[in-house]
Image (cartoon, rainbow, N blue to C red; front, side, top):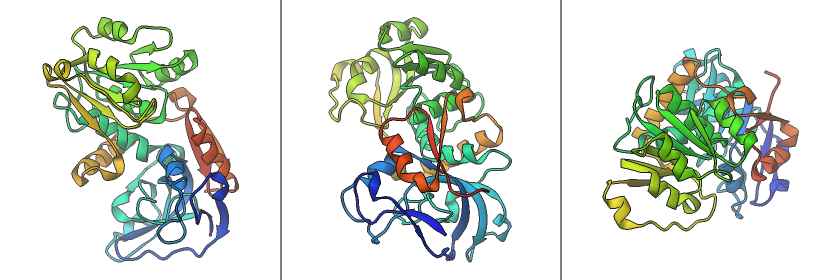
Length: 338
């Protein structure tokens, strides 16, 4: 099989396409013939780690979609031939999705049904992260489904990003009122296309004033991409028992918070890294995201506020470079002609 591999950390130039034997699934494992591989920021950050991968080589990328080719002992043989999406393929394993085949534990394979491989390859890290951000607070439900967030207000800081887009889509499915912040008119169109009820351009508008106008009592949840830069805003718009869930460090690594203004409303700050979530939280997220996809309420593409950028397997380095440069939308690598 053809696979993208790196043997040392560094810039995208360390990625090379090589021939490797197709692996055999062991007990509890599933072999997936990958059609589309999704690239996330954590993929290039892992690659830039500066050290050699633990086993000497690594196929990058956590997310992907394709068809089950074979299963190991203990896995239902009925999975063979199923269209699936996979998550965390490269987490503490060498078999990422930037290859014609990937090998993953059975629990990390989810039936996709008739949905597109493009959607399947876009679900994992962004949507599981968004799910945790939306469900971490006391005022929010711990599961997401139609009507689950009725009466709640969600602020998505950075509504045009991949996680921001996922949060908007999931929150709207759950009937929350969604306010998204963006940095300009083009991104405002993307956030609106994703389903945001209100879009605020933080470069042109007073975010606190706009959010308080829309939600006088404040917001119940904040999905936060830049906690250091936005802390003062989040403090001023938090409702009683609100949760600010920070999943990235855009805008700086240092966070300063005032104690008394957050103590009164019993506000919570939650830091989110999907890879180290509890097994229970991750299982809920996978189940709910799969249910939303099965219902056809999750979308990708410009019409859904998430433009798609395609690269062939031979141009995996360019795909990684695009994500590292801040590409707006979702970068996908087409691994086969399936």
